[in-house]
Every structure is written in structure tokens, then in C-alpha cells.
Image (cartoon, rainbow, N blue to C red; front, side):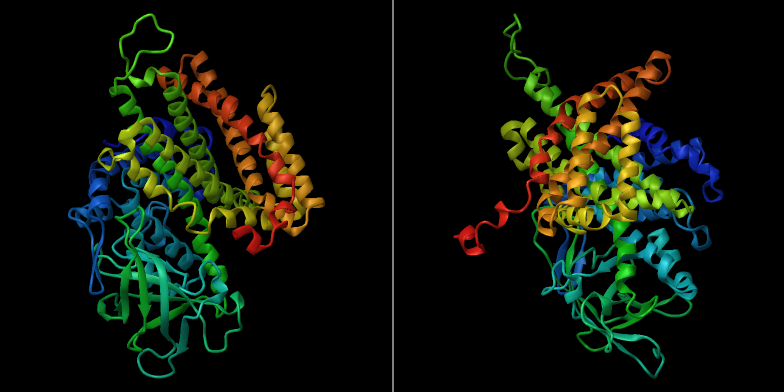
Length: 584
């Protein structure tokens, strides 16, 4: 099944939800004119379809291979990655000072969406490097920026995030990797790094000459917990002052994980300093690691949310194609008893429309949040606050809906969906990791109720709900869900215990996500209707947009109101049994 980039849909959402045209008011984005946005969006999609998509199946069936510390990618991957470097797409939103194009982050998100829809496992190499770039921009010295950023921006070198350790899991404060100061010799002022990190995406590969690891570690005087963590640049191979690659840096890939999906992405166990010769340099201030980590992770969480859109799009395209081609049974209620394509059957229509509507809703939420990144970067404090609120929604709801859509894609294929050769199962296996990494979706829900609802005394969430209310006239289901969310938020803020908030956090996150998506789909419905009435635009596209938006509003929004009880019923039942009683 080939990938067809959804360029019309992307441009529509960029214009009407991200409002990307308005970014030209900022000096930084003065060149982001509509024609530039259109050319780049079309070029991104074409590249992904031609270079990444044909490798998707081999990435799954052959996968990355480990042998004695080295990782080899399947045939064709090195050439495709080099083609990506040659396009310059990796530098879309990078600062011009270091070779970037200073275009909006929202456009970079479109790039990642296309690459991931074409080949999700492979695209993880493109997803992690921006986190390293953002952290160095925010926290690195000028010398570090000049040394590392140019080749990270082009993609000539890739970057990784090294947080998790075997004994720590999601508890970053429990990490044990050490950083010991070097006091003399040519590396004086740097640090000897020693420890083991796990689940390191593209921690080793043969796509580039060098890999730049950003590693969280503890200095000798570090206090316990997260307060004692610092961040270090640890290249796979050392780089001299002139940018030349020298000796290996005592970083070894011990193994790669054997996973359910994303087989084209080597998930590595990395060992630093087995021979006490691994050298790193500190980024920012000592004990500033957590701040730098969140710089890496916040946009990474948006990018993981994008994976729900990526797989949603690819699974939907494949299911639509199969449903048009598969002939089976007469249509219920038809006078003819001739078999028809299964796309004519009502339940298949239900699944296909749900897949399409869910993908479009998640894309709207993603692009809207990405537009807040661009406005925040231009000094808009309101956008910064809204972005913080939206980030857990994009990550959690985007990946949840992506899993649901991929599962529906298998169902549309029937028995053939359970057979690997059709490729439908790969989409589900690939996306299933997304609710887990970069902070599980449960952690996102806890972040929502623990950190985001109280922001500015509750004014940040109140502002979003006020904006939705202003647009919700005439939409009864959306208004009902809005009222349910307001009541649940009020209960969380005023009456719930800590356990109660945690118990209701996930249902509330889903309710708020669907509410926000419903609002954004309503905007699109109204714009599509107005353009159709005026005889503007692509009539077939606008008609489809009307229907998918209306399906989301009439079918998926009302479902979310059913979560209110779970959001506000508290934690009593969860703890009525002891741990032994529950598991016995």
C-alpha cells in the first residue's frame, strides 16, 4: 500500500487552525508566506512518499540488526537518510545563525508527520534529533552551539536523549550514571561519564558518521533525587576544535531490544565508560539537568502525539483502499443481491468515518499546539501557557486515538487484517509504543491535573474553556461536554483529594482532549461550509471535511460525556482492596 500525502488537508489545517499565515507578523517568520508554506508542504509529502514509504515493509520484516556493538540498518535506509540530509528539511525551524531556515516549528511538524506516515519506525531518527537541538539552543554555551548545532541541524549527525536506566524506569531521580570532573590534560574541564542507559532510540546506527548523545548524570557532589542531575554532551566519536571526528569515545551499544513494533528503529542499551575513557561536557549549569531535560521532552511529547496522526493517516488510507476493493455480500436493504464492495456496508462505513474523523481531529489538535510553540518562541506569554496545557492532550489523546484507528484498520480488513502480509497489523504494532514512551499517558494525565489545571490560579484552563464556549453556540453535544468538563475541573480544583485527582485524571484528560478537538473540528466545519457556499476551494474536499467534522461532533463528542462519572467518582473503589486482595 503506497502512501499519499494529505497535502490539501494539511494546508487547510495549517491555514485555518494553526493560522500559519499570521506568523509573518513576526520578524523571525517574515519569509513564511503562503506560497512558501505550500511549496514546502508539497515537497515534504513528495519526498516522504518517494524515499521513506517504499522502505516501510522492509523496516518491519528485516529491521535493524545488532552485531558485536554495531547496528546495521536494512538495505536502502542509508541512501534514503542521505537523501533527507540533502533536502535540508531537517533544518526547517533551526536558527539561521547555525545553518537553519528559521521557518515555523509547525512546518517542521508537517515534515515529521509525513515521514512518520510513510515509515514510522525509520522516522524516529528524525524525531529525536530536534530535542537535542532545542536543548543546546536553550542551555548550551555559544561555543557548544557553534560546534554541535550545524551538523545536527542538517542531519549529518543525529542526536539522542539518554534518560532511562535499568533500575530507574520513569523515575529519573533514581539514575546512577556518574560524571567525574577531569582536572588535567587536554580534556581538563570536561567529565568522565560512566553508566548504563536503556531504551535509547537510534542510540547506535550506520546512517551517519557521528551520534551526539545528551546524557543525564550525577557529579560527585550531587544531592539525591532530581535536584542532583546534570546534562552532558557525549559524542559517539570525539570531535576536535575544528570539527574533525577523531577517536571513539568509549560508548558501546550492548544490545538492541526485540520489540512488538517499530523494528526499523534500533532501541539500544548503551554503556558509557566501560574503559573509563568516555568524555562529556556539561550543558548549562551543574544540577540544571531536569530543566534541560524538559526542554528536550516537551516538544518531543508533541512529536510523539504526532505519531498518532501519522499512523492514523496511514492506517486510514490502507483501510479505505481495501474497503473499495474487497467485494463481499449484498448491501443490507438493497433489492439487488449482488455482492458489493465492503465500503458500502454501514458498519464498515462507521469504522472508516471514525478513522478519518479521528485522524483529522488529532491533526487539528497537533497543529494548533505547534502554532503555540511558534508564538511562544516569538514572546507570546499567553501562547506559552496554552501550549503547556495542550501538550499532555496532544501526547496522550493523539496516541490513544492513533491506537484505536490502527485497531479499526485491522478490523476493516477482517481476517486478512490479522495476517501480517497485508500490512494492517504493522500499523497497530508500530503505534502501540506511543502511549508508553516520552512519559506514559498516565503520566500525562497526572501532569494535567497536578501541574496544568492549577496554572496561574486556574486561569489557563479557564481561558481555553472560555474560548470554546464563545464558539459553541448551536452545538448541543459540545456544550454538554463543555459543562461536564467545567464541573469536573471545578471538583478537581476544590473538592478532590490527591488520590481522587489521580483516579479521575485520565478520564478528564480524554474529556478535555475531545472537547478541544470538537471545538477545532467545529471551526473547520464552519469554514468548509462557508467556502462551499461561496463556491470557493475544492468542492469534494470541502464536502468531505463537512462530513468528517460533523461525525466527530455528533458521534465522538457525546461519547466523552460518558466519562464524567469516572472523572469525579474519586479513588474510593480503587483502594477498597489491598494490593494482595486485588491481585490474588
